[in-house]
Image (cartoon, rainbow, N blue to C red; front, side, top):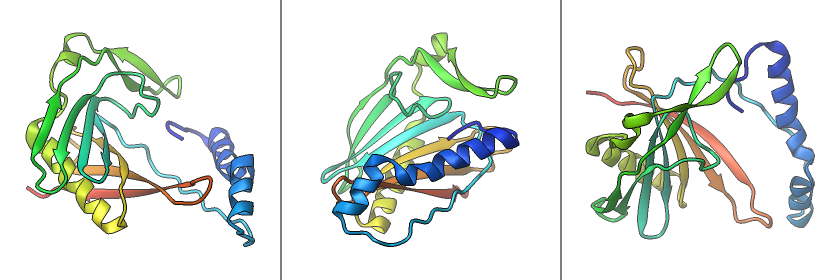
Length: 193
């Protein structure tokens, strides 16, 4: 959950996370996989990262796909992203396409929400330079090696004066259960000059 401010909305968000333990899907999963342990959950609350550029990276058997775009994460695929496909073995670019991004998500502090903002001609440009896109493919490959399975990662990059070369990554890892469940892990990487 993003952009949660003040005590009452925070408590509501935490309750929403906790209640996910008892969705029909979660109950079915535990039953079908014979999980009889007591349900427990920790909810981690962190400061929201200011995102100038965001990325979504995916790995499969042969490729690493890097999608980049301006603004906060677009979890519902509502707008076009630049797409670069790398060969997983040697991280050479197989294909790249820059797409027009019509709008971005920005934080409206007064309304406590993420809102769409028109990008106009800014949306025509490549969202992230080639060197940084290549670095995201290397990071994705390292994360996959660490987790020992294909990965989907959401990255937020702040290029502002207080960013200090830090990239925030939220990894999305799905197990092989029936139905499959997904676990999220946040990683913070500091890029040294």
